Length: 147
Image 1 (cartoon, rainbow, N blue to C red):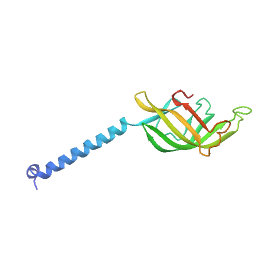
Image 2: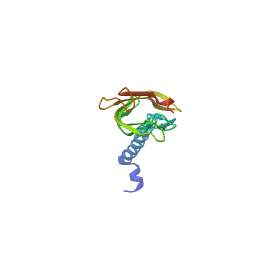
Image 3: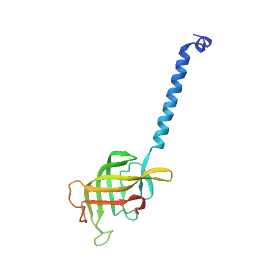
Image 4: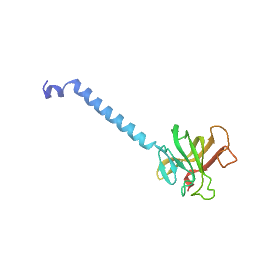
């Protein structure tokens, strides 16, 4: 089939419509993914699905590591991880680390630097026992102020 014949055929129109549709669909998908991305504030940095969240940024004396996220979105996030605290006895350098497995909930969406971010964390021990060096099985803090 010569170009002149192809140009006047219905197949050319179908091909063009398909290419336009796929291009527009791809653009829409990528644009929505970028504009609906939700981050978390982590020591002043906007982070996406971090595997570690630090409570005290200066010395990382309290943090949650090995995080695995079950759900993540603008309405909040849930996951599990390992809580770690340094007892700082007799000093923080010589202190002992204590651990607990915890459930994690992120909440309070806020726009920071033009991006949606979750700014509050709540944790609870998986076994219901108190967190190490604490009288409670729970802890919570505003992450946008952490540090």
